[in-house]
Image (tube, rainbow, N blue to C red; front, side, top):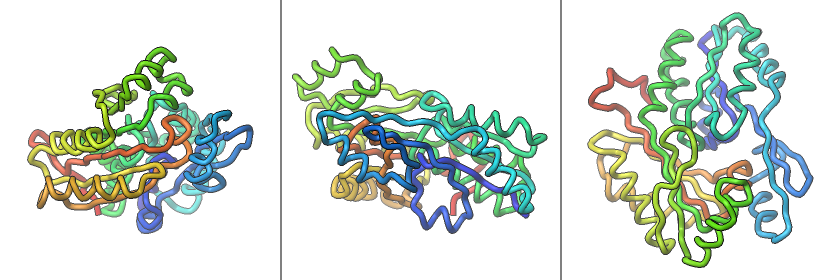
Length: 293
């Protein structure tokens, strides 16, 4: 049986891809105003954005427990998987990778854990690359390397309507948030080394979306690319963003995916998010790609 691929709920992969590639998704937990639920199972993006629209709220997230991962890995191995590659959101954002590694330590080297250094489709593209390698018969290390290589060729940028939710989550301080509100600053963020970092600030939403397109085109270079577009309660914005990207990149675009980010991301950034993920299918210096479906 091929190597099994596990990820977490913050990949925000469309459900049809999860089914088609027989992926196993372990959900993170979201707590909204004291009510706890599993992301994508008990808590939807709509639940999160509705709560986040209120002035008085508490929103937090927590990683899966190591035992939850251990049970998942044992089930897959007992079902005949040759091994498990478990690919997760950046360790800079969550203890999910640590929990996965703690669970893997007790399974005799049959589970390899990969830190994608990203989230959303920045995590999803490495997961798909791992699944493609597994389907082609790669061994445990080959599937792991496919995920690592894809992560290195994947770039994430996202635009926010407000700095307020980053302030609430401790990503920026109150003075920065107030200054940004007074100046109508709209931040564009990226994750160059696994942590969320301010890339630049713009003054309007339209300029922010235009800059996302520019940055994505720069990230693509001359390579063939797959594109992921995320949004939070902003489906029209996502559609416009994808249309602009495909017009600019033309024949370079291979696959495109659009999905709403979930409650975990919503809890930290708030409604209005628009994100672009660029996965370069190959780089001039790379030896090749396991390939995406």
